[in-house]
Image 1: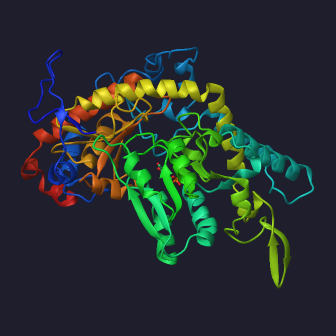
Image 2 (image 1 turned 30 degrees about the vertical axis):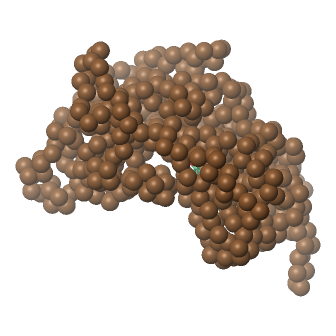
Length: 510
Ligand SMILES: Cc1ncc(COP(=O)(O)O)c(C=O)c1O
């Protein structure tokens, strides 16, 4: 899991040998690093360095004068017939300069993806032509809008191979989808002494709802641990699933480690013990073919905004019999059958779980995003991302004093095209701030909503570069070159606060 360029800084001369050994950063170096700031803020040192950068790098990064057109020419054609350069041109946000002469390099795709023109146009077309509340009117526009909304449900169902489109519930996002299961099926079926099995790598979205449930019901939470290479210790995880287990909930792909968890195998174990299985597929559905029937889970959740769709919409897939046996989530319009002052009866699925006016325009645009991805084919997207993943790993692993969290592409060839890392002596927030300001690289830093995982790794923050199919190998080079330059800058900047202009120092609180 942990790769480092070693205790002695390797030469950057071409062909110079690099020592690559296992290295686990101490809390002090990787977690605190040089940062003086809170974990979400760039440190004061980054501020100092950036003040200097504004002079040093005002001309932009090397080669930054290249126009967007020439940048896009750098995109290569992938194996197979997909013209990825052409595909990239579908994304208007990727064509911008974040500062004059500094084109955007967007590598924060695990947080949210950019949107293709087809999706943006569908949103605009829908609002401009079909906009009308769904399931409520007899007029033409309402019929059109209802039809588009329900067609989107069919498209999403097809996208994850759900046997029945009524098993797709539209929610605000994946987080709400997990909460829906926690507040309905789980509250009705989990009690004191029952066990819920999770892993230490879960996003807070797949942890906090179960903590709340455990507090309310007296259920016990158990956690699968990691192997030393940053993958799930599957044997240990399976040993946690017993007759007491009511629910197992885990991510398909970790948003930090990038590992792919063996859902099918876990599903078999769960069902041997009559435990139910929820899969957080936020980081898999956008990147690989996901078939809910093959996986064998009971529920699966995903967010539209990570898969080329709009924000404000996500979905829950659940087995029809489980959804039908669950009490409602929120009460209100849309989800009812008959309402009397004394009480109400509720609609069948999916509307039983979609109280109030749904995000119907966003659902329609999500349907368009699924069609867009299907046209590229998820297999081609996965192949492309495996290449990007290998490139990303190889480049980041060669950084001086780096620790990468998660399995290498050799250890997990299916791993996601994201790399989370720390560099000795450099706070992740400092690196992210500098590469953004200096070279227009959108790199994430922080705990990525996985504080317990970061604690497990002995750190409080990490930097993350995450690619999507529209990224290029050249962008990965630009990003890692920028990180390398930032490391040098930070290291050369030690003690520079002393010579800082006093007014600036006061502003930066150093
Ligand atoms: C693995 C994982 N699960 C859940 C979520 C939560 O997604 P959302 O905030 O869209 O509900 C994320 C978002 O980063 C994620 O990466």
